[in-house]
Length: 561
Image 1 (cartoon, helix red, strand yellow):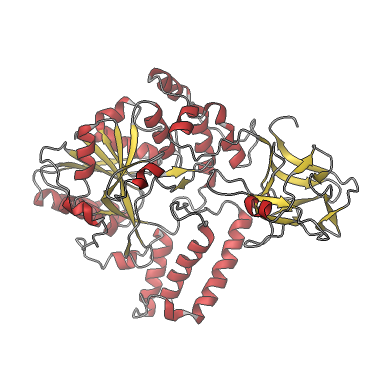
Image 2 (image 1 turned 135 degrees about the horizontal axis):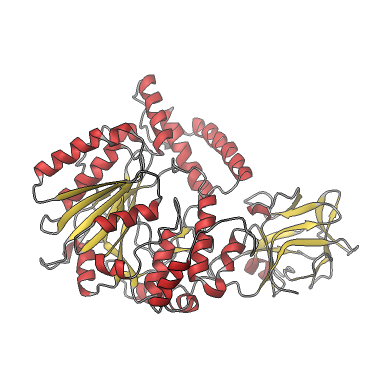
């Protein structure tokens, strides 16, 4: 039964969180953003578990040999940490990892006189065995003459075993490795990821600092490619490629190298490298990346010169995007190194904050205010927040703005044009938010997904009802895509005798001859330009019919139209 639960969680997460894109783009997980979304998730997990009872033959059999008490312990640990701690506690600390590098990586050689590295591991109530395994892998798989120090940053953990038990393990490592310095940094209150990483940087003394999560294991030769590049160019912020450690069985899944990016919500995403990169036909080569994840390696002094990390960013989210924009616009670059691999546990959830969206909204607004110039309100649009009085205190940003001015950083428009051209600037948006029928007192909703039929539903204004109206007349329901390579879903009039509206990828609708352009003014009718019919409410349902004067209102207006 435990295997069923773990695999139900895994398959549910895959089902809920992945989008279909082209072969060269991988989109990061979609987060559960609101209560109706959460309710839907709970219903889905029950459905998946019921389905798995019928299809257990395709599942792993991990946990089937455990006693009832052991299964209960494993389940409790999983709910506490978001990954399989019961299994972790029984795995060797020095377990072997599969070599997932491109074969060409094995033929590369590196100089002996590379810069020294200090590895920062940050954690908050991490499982002890996970931290031990991370440290063991770093010591065993990093050349001794390069590894100067390990810095453990505890962001005010409450777990008792992260005190004396971890202290004893650290002392044993120090005795076994007399030339290695292990530094402990303990926060007296929870500061969040950005502040914890900055604390680790402040404690570091090595030439290069590697800022990592504590739920990782490094592969062989992980650090040499990064150090070699930084030695040649100190302004490069380097990132390894992350293999996924499954939260259920802790097996390692190979992830191919890809650039790291973000959407206008500032959620992490994985776009492809540039077309020029793929023309080289060598997957062992480093590639330029618009953004960086939380794990990165940089010249310690250079990182200090450009402002380390924004310690005004709270809890989780946005700090990686802020760093990447700052690096690119203030004189550096971000590169991904396929020959450097780190295995990273992908938690099912983050125990310290099950709902990340409040922190993400606040942090995204802060990053936008400092770095995004005339495009800063795209963050408001993505989160369906008003431009003014959005309800979030982003803190004092005056010092970060002074830093940007002092470093003479390029404008965000330069970044979009030269570093992240796939990011849609949304310059022609006229309105966004829920769209309400004033006569029927209901809103347009994307309806069941997958599916192509929008519905009339009570106005809750969560993501299924996010509406975006473009100057072209296109009307998107269920959110607007942040990237040019992903098509939006257009409200469409199928034409002919069909009275049911459709919701299709815009290009598909155009190819089928549907009407996707709408004339609309606030508080007036919503009329299709091609068919001259209106979207209206009849018997509490959305219909396309001859216009009777029904009125619509969109929640937020960007510019007059």
